[in-house]
Image 1: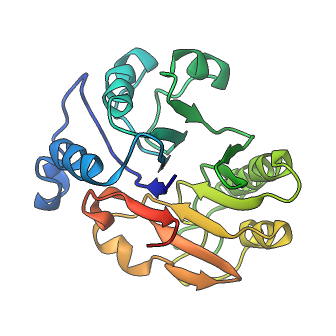
Image 2: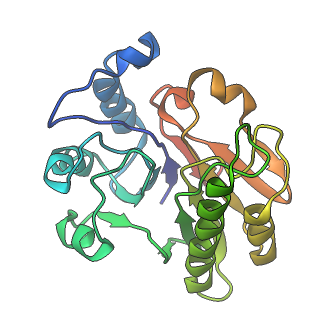
Image 3: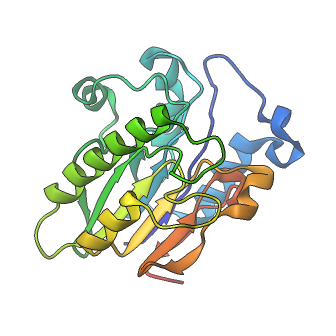
Length: 231
């Protein structure tokens, strides 16, 4: 069993939205995703997908994209991103998902060798440019949701966290979200959201005792990143 991650698939089967409007790096990105996935991922492997999965606005519009992902090898773990407007109540989503797909929301999922995948969408972090009082309220709500997720993990699990938003600001300053992960002894944090020039500020590697991995599609050039076992 191996564990991979890739986020920000931005699929649009229902109403096609060419991602090349964001640059030629996205040219033919669904086909490139499929080819790279088929080369890397086996049927017993897991793939973590931390948000921005489909441009659909409602679940029926996103289902063709979810089924497209389902036809690829491996078992998939989904997290909501800021563009996943189609994401309904978690009970309704889980009823609609194919059997090889799982969604995390205020809970966790055990993979393989006692790895508990937890997560929440996250939000703009304190200290970011134009951070507002409104952002602060949403950020604190996301912290509460992550704590619910972490608390749900069995005792003794190796804790991994998925967020969609980066867990720090562009200066990589600590915040309450980082403190919470530290309190629970989180081992890895996997996130997406950053594209193009914004990736220059990404936190990648070891800091605060946590291994951070940026897995947005364009950063990985469409190739799922192997996280376990470390290649």
